[in-house]
Amino acid sequence: MLKDKVIVVTGASRGIGEAIARACIDGGASVALASRKQADLDRVAHSLPAERAIAVACHTGKADDVDALIAKTLERFGRVDGVVNNAATNPYFGPLLDTPDAAIDKTFEVNVRGYLYLARAFVKHARARGGGGSIVNLASIAGLRAAPMQGIYGATKAAVISMTQTLAFELGSSQIRVNAIAPGLVETKFAAAIVGNPMLRDHVVNRTPLARHAQPNEIAGAAVYLLSDAASFTTGSVMVVDGGLTSS
Image 1 (cartoon, rainbow, N blue to C red):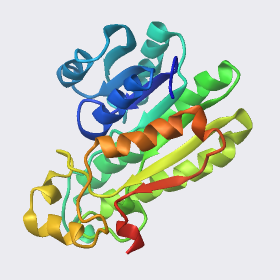
Image 2: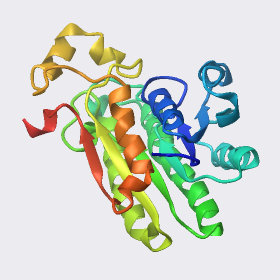
Image 3: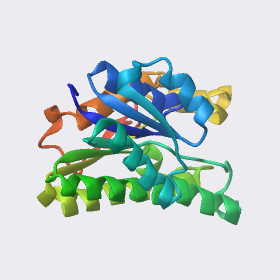
Image 4: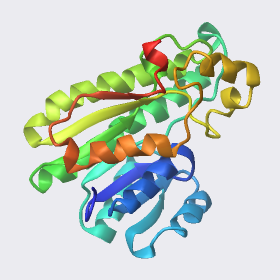
């Protein structure tokens, strides 16, 4: 589905980002993998075809890092057809009003500002080559409904959904599609505080029609679809991938 496309995936050193990067490779794409730690990225990149994968350390909350990520991808592959904003953080678990200021700043820096920086850098390139392309933002069902004990994280994901819809409207004339994926509970290191706690995990799973949580590869398929030409008339959408939780 992605033959000859070039995709940038952030947060690609593990979890959902790694799964998306691998699925893009399987779909025929070349991929630039990005995250903050080069060693973790290299571990993933070395398991992928060398001619179709590069690893670029990048702090997505820093505009210069993001611009360098796009530049290095262009230097290696000559173009960028799509980006996946997946890098995220959630440093605080507790009541919303007790969130430390440092945690508020960090969560918005990575989860919102970082997404906007990558979108901006990609759009500059895409418009220069005549338009077209796809932006996929990883949101969360925490951005669609109340997010007890994860209030700041949920607020950033609500912002991601709003950003997705606004960019879809503003970039449509450039034939750049912008969509979001809103996963439910996925078994990753990122979600270890919930998945690793039987009481919290069961609270979620027992309300999920499929009666389980997801694995990272189960989110990757949605990303591949939204990046591909199969989704050529899909923009401004929020694809919920949560085992039916938000329908219950």
